[in-house]
Amino acid sequence: MLNILLNQMAVMINLIRNFIITSDAWTGNIQNEMDSRYVEKSGLTNLFTEHKFWGWAGLLLIFVAIAAIFYFQFQAWEQEDQEKNKRLTPKQKEFIKFLGKASNQSKGDQATFKK
Image: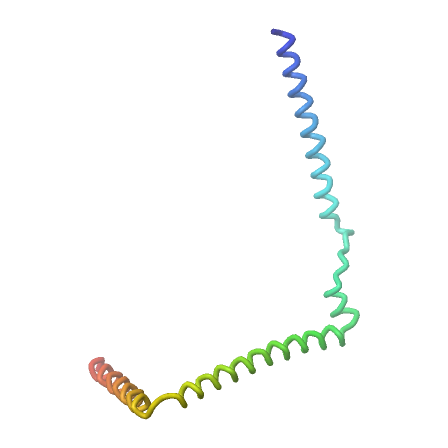
């Protein structure tokens, strides 16, 4: 019985020692990461500090590309709307005008109720 207890204690002591060694190595790595002498090399930062022209030219190029995407997408939507309006029959156009007038009239009626 005493022998089993001593074996279990030895196993526990060994486990605790391994845990302490592992945690000490891990905390040592954290300390190295927090070291103030650590300098990270960043290509993007170097692009704007060392090669200012190419950094800003690239940024401008990205902006122009995104603006062009939006411009042409809005043009496509506008063209779809115009084609859709061309396909309406005269009766449908008359009905749309009627709905617009009715909507404006109901807005006017609501304004008089609020007064």
